[in-house]
Length: 374
Image (cartoon, rainbow, N blue to C red; front, side, top):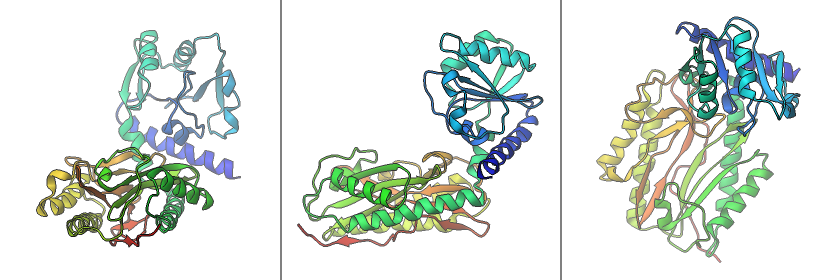
């Protein structure tokens, strides 16, 4: 029953994209391995050297093309009834092209995602030169941006696990613990609480000024800040949380910087409502940081969508006129990064509601200090 319900979910989502794309003159949708093929067909498969694809004509029966190894679609339930298999010694591009011609798509307009593998698409264009490929990303991403109640429940579960795991891990910091050791503690807590994989980044002291710095063997010392960026997933739906805390008493300037970042986070949260643009949310938070004199140190966008991928649409960035809708999930993560001194980020995963905004990650945003020990 659950498998059938999920198959219906994937079909309904695909039908919404098809209906939206018809108005643009497209004739079919071609999905390659990645998030979209799983979301719109129910057959999840990652990229490899072996071609897999779902060809969905807007008129006619769709087909999934896979290698012999995937004939049973890994035991997954999909709404697409036809599976065409290629053998290891055969050319999968030829099989895909033959299916296009069989379905009357030899001169069609076919939508593909922005991350479609160039090599396969280029070979396909040479084989079926009258096919016109168009970017379907806007349509594919919109359906994934607006979450159903069930999707939101899975994200709430992932966020609750993330909150609790980090809260408990912070209680175990001590002098001399390394970034890698703290990351291992967090990973263990996530697994113990039911998280299904995830990501963890830990940075101490001035290393936190490296927004994408790698977790290392650096040791924790009194007075340092501790920045943790992490998340897990439930049924494939992710959380994303960053907190910056202090081991021992922070310098007064560091307290000030933390307060500015926290204020920017709150300002953006209060500005979220249906109809507001992604760009204006970025501007709202950025104004707080600029007015405090730290504008040059806020070097990234305010946030990004979260769902089946940690980073996806919508992107909360300047000049993005996309309007937020109820059900859209994304991060609010202002930060200040001063090289050689400190990095502070306060990040939450949120969802736009009809009334405004709901935080899905709820770990306190108040400045936290932990006593020196060890």
